[in-house]
Structures are given as C-alpha cells and as structure tokens.
Image (cartoon, rainbow, N blue to C red; front, side, top):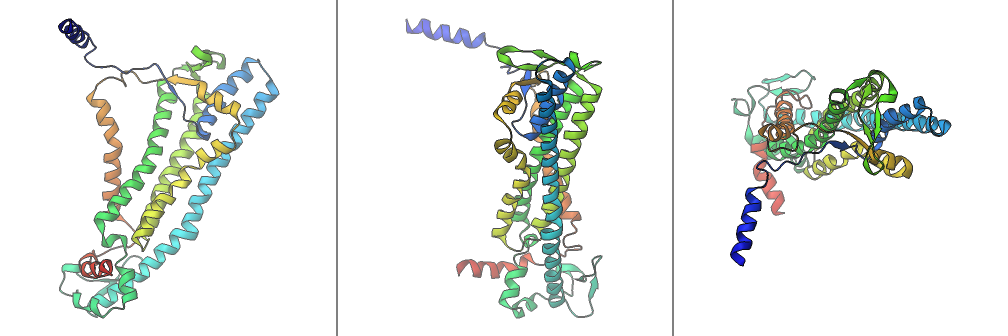
Length: 344
C-alpha cells in the first residue's frame, strides 16, 4: 500500500509544470499617496466623464488627491532643500576645514597647493616624498579624533553604509520606473475615457486602457517629480554622509535620511480616508508577460539595481566633491590611534 502511495506521489511530481510558473494577469498599486494619486487620475476622471455617481463628491475627491500629491512633493522637496542649506553645507564646510588643517600639518612646508575649493593639499599624496607620518603624533588628541572620524578614512565601512543608502533610494526609483513602464507602455492607449476601465472580480476595477492625456498626467504629476526628487535626495544625502565626522552618526544619519522617502507612507496612514484606501486597494493594472516564469532575464533584471548602486558608489568615491582632491592619506596613520581608542 505504501509503495502505491509513493509511486502516485512521484507521478504527480513528474506531471507538474517544469517551469513552475507564477504568472498573474494584474498587479496592485502601492498603498501610499502616489498610489492614491494614480487612482484619482484614472478612476475619478473616468467617473466624472462617465457622469455616474455623486459628481460633486468625485470632483472634491479628485481635487483633494491632487492637493495631497502636491503637498507630498512639496514637503519632500522642502526637506531636501533645507538638508542642503542647513545641514549638508555646514557639515561639508566643517569637513573641508578640518581636512585642510590636517594637510597643513602632515606635509612639508612649501609642498602644498590649493585645490579647486581653495583648501590646502599636499603634493604627492600619502606615497609622496613630502608626507611626514611622524607629524601625526604631534597633533592634539581632539584633532586626532576629528580627522580619524572622516568617513573616507575607513573606505570599506563608508562604502558599505553608502551602498545601503543608495539601495534605499534605488528601491524608490525602481518602483517609480516600474509604475511608469506599466501605465505608459504596457497599458494600451485609447481615444476616450469611457474605454479605460472595466469591472473585475470581487469589486475590483481593472485599468484596461488609458488616454494620452491621462498617461501624460501620470507621467508629469507622479513620474517626473518622484524621479527628480529621488535623484536629488540620493546626491544630497550622500554628500551629507561623506561629511559626517562620526562613525556612529554616519549609521544614524543614513537611517534618518530615509524619513524623507517615507513621508508618502506617513501621509497615507494619517490623512487618507478609508474610502480612498479601499479604492486604491481595488485598482488592478496589467502585469508584464512571463514575469512569473523561471527566466535568466528576470534574475538579471533584479540584480541590475544592485549593480547600478555599486556603480554609483564607485563613481562617487572617484569623483566626489565633498573633499576635492582627497589624498587618501588618513587611513594608515589612524589605524593605531583608533585601536588605542577602542581599547579605552
């Protein structure tokens, strides 16, 4: 009897699909203010033209959604602007002065030059004939602590933190790119608003087509602002992290910067009504074909964002302007001092 059960089980395994497909026809919107904005642009415009339901209420809901999208973008943009003016610029200026003073103390007099930002740099760098490692012992303990806390003094640790920060922003950029691809490219174009939606199962609404004006609205009101905001935040945040003179603060600042990206979720939780949340949850749009199949392209595509993040970190280390013409002359002289501090 047990042999028969085993053979029956083996038969079911052999008859299973070899590719283990996980395809699905439709995707769901993210539960955030941008998802609500897309819902308003698509669904409210459809119902307003269709002429059904409570027209004043639909109009008010559409205006409310667009106002909240504008407020989300404004709030994120405001924090990025003030991050540059009140936080990043001050930290970068302080970092440049400290490193410039370090260069003055570590290189022989007469063998210094001013970089593009007007701060001193030693000729030849750490391997040059004018760098005097013994001068480090004559620096004050307070100054040693400051200069040895430069993120660039520990490139391995800093690059790891920077990679995590970059991946955090890339996640938002990836999701924006996916939404634009689905709504602007995969979704067919139609001539009239009445052709855009159709009812689905379990009270869902399926986006089957979109008009050109609606696609332009999604691109202009959601895609462009969100993409620009993420790119600027990535650059400004990286610049701030590079000027953070404390390894503990470096970790905390990388975590804290994410709150700008999470404003869309906070406003969704606090401001959006339950009715709007249900409408967003019930919207369905076309999924990509074969995305659920076992395919090398699917795996390569998912790794693309990691490779892009690593490339960004490498390029930043080579072309950064937080400390222009950085000589990479801090790490070696600080090794013994950092070990001494760690032992207490």
